Length: 292
Image (cartoon, rainbow, N blue to C red; front, top):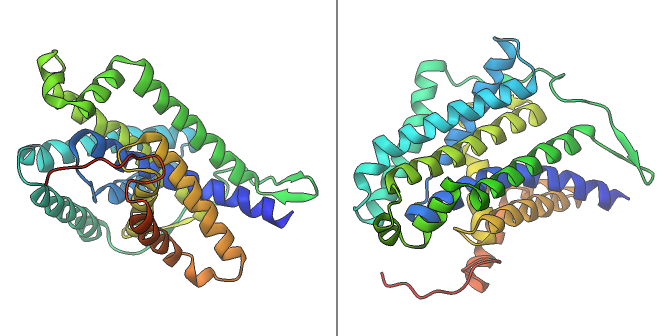
């Protein structure tokens, strides 16, 4: 029974990692860039949700939508200002820029707002617990899981059933051929950043309401773990990011329940080392030779 409860908790945590990991994997699939500023978009989304609830007096879902919209715009601005001028530059230049953008967001936010943490109101999510098979499962965990799964389903619909999704898949497969077929590559890349950043903003609000405390550097560890989840599932593969996030959350939950809570953060990096040694392409990836 205890195992089932830990599994549900792990899936809920993993769904947050999965939402962030989707942004990493979508951007990499389109422009082959690891956007290390993505974790900071997650942080910005969490604070936008917090101020929407505490200052504007909104409930959870309006705050979630505002955060997603604001982060989508923020993601597009990052792409247009920082990454678009480096579209034809070397990968190392883009990678260094991504790290620089991350630091700029973190410490710029601290400069204007301060570094003190704040706490989400405790009544944002339903607190009622559910009894199932003799165990008590947190209603918040199930609520978070339901929202995360719904967002992932919506993403799958966008990618596979809409015009912009078809353009994203075409650019991911061959950007030059897509351009020759009339696809606006620049707009498609911006749309990819917008969608990925919106999901990160949603994850920020969900994280804040579940773990209560947020602060300007909160995006570092979840951002790294989401990157590990994307690598675990196969970087550039959307279903892989989902599965990788959920799997990583379950692993962390079982490690904590086993009495090794101090290893909770470290186990993610152990997973990264193991996956790079034994299956560098990830669980869903294929080994493809690439000329460097």
